[in-house]
Length: 119
Image (cartoon, rainbow, N blue to C red; front, top):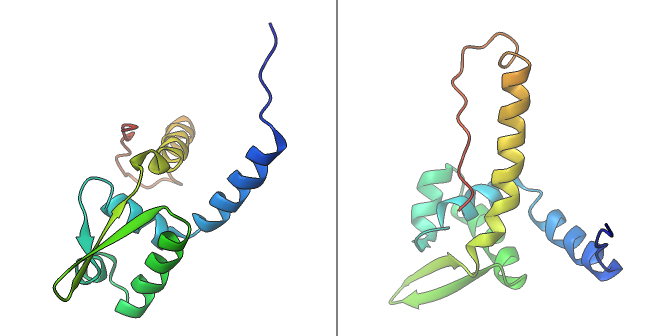
């Protein structure tokens, strides 16, 4: 059976996307807007960081075409263009949970780890 190998451009583009997503705050932003749009002020409250910080992350995500913005009065609402972008994060988290369970938890901590569902 022949396995399909992705073209080189796939690796180039994926690396650019992974680099953009290599920020826990950006991943947290995306996770919070995957099902419904939110205002910057809502994200500031959820993430516990400054408005300037959230705005910088959103600007990078918007420039990359990962999120869109919609203005309503003085508020700007953000949403994910395609929620599929969250899947790698969920997959990696589930691998981490499986590995942690296999090792018997996190260094003796009694945390309950639950796998997340992939959209």
